[in-house]
Length: 120
Image 1 (cartoon, helix red, strand yellow):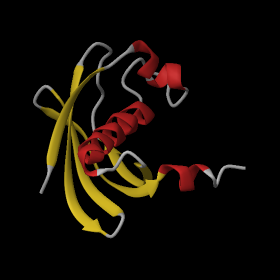
Image 2: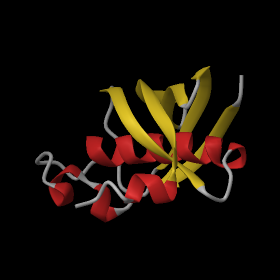
Image 3: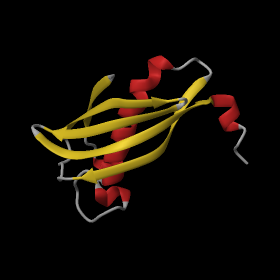
């Protein structure tokens, strides 16, 4: 199956304190989730037409270890399953040699204009 690895550097605005998800100056879980989702989104980019995009619809994540500001996080997304317009991924994140997060993610491919018409 298709795989993509991307590197992200932890910024000060991605800490648990700054994002309001905790009390420590370490990578916040919501920021880790965003990195994971971004990697999966980018893995699909070449498969989409100019009129399409993908949207996240499910995420199941375990945040396993803290990561300091300035550290580099390597996120690996692997496409596991394709069902009509739905894509399922396995995603892992590493800080140096240590796994800091893992999970599964689902995205749905949509026609951008049709999707945006659902806004009220």
